Length: 79
Image (cartoon, rainbow, N blue to C red; front, side):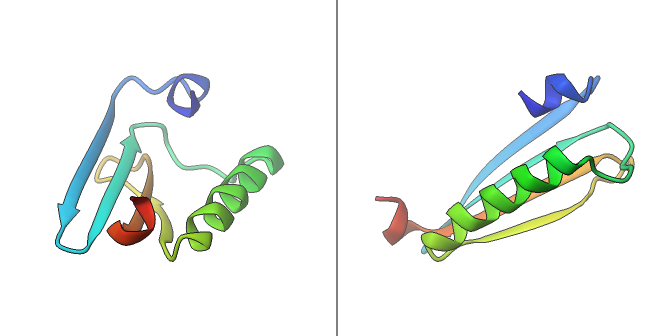
């Protein structure tokens, strides 16, 4: 939904199993600007849910200056 809302022309989703954890990364090509209040609230909600399972959320930029959201969760909490 977020990719469509921000009108990304391209998006990339990666899922990686890394031993005892799973990593998920979503990136797009929408230039990073100051987030709206509803986006900030959404990220805080996602971060809160991920931390409940011992995970970590990171926000950043892609190589083309778009948004990147990465999550890492221990596999034992996902099962």
